[in-house]
Length: 161
Ligand SMILES: [Zn+2]
Image (tube, rainbow, N blue to C red; front, top):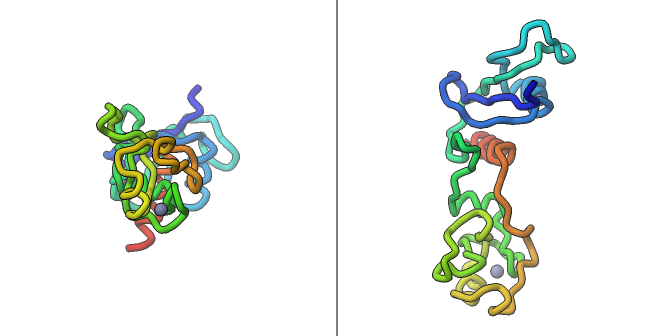
């Protein structure tokens, strides 16, 4: 019995990812999603136990997981993840810094990217934080967002329009 629930975009055709049963119930409870599929005769509190839910409002799936369960890397996504806070000085970040320089064979990935302000990015240049004497102080160690994070960002995006 899977503890995960599949999430579809409004319309039910577009797969977005998976969330925990608890998260799915919260989405239903808050009116953000409706039950698409459920296990018959297996109530979960006041609900049928869902195996799939469908969002009530269409989410422009810039942040969606692909089927392998990966949130596609993007610069905008890194800025969103780090709250537009520069990893090095805490100022307003508008650029993305590759923590370990790209030309040392480190591709642009979630785990090698942090938000940075233009002056810090410029100052650090093609050096590692240790080489530049600029440790990551103001954001978490780079991390790969989960579907729940991506969903939350989509929602924020949605509310703004
Ligand atoms: Zn900075």
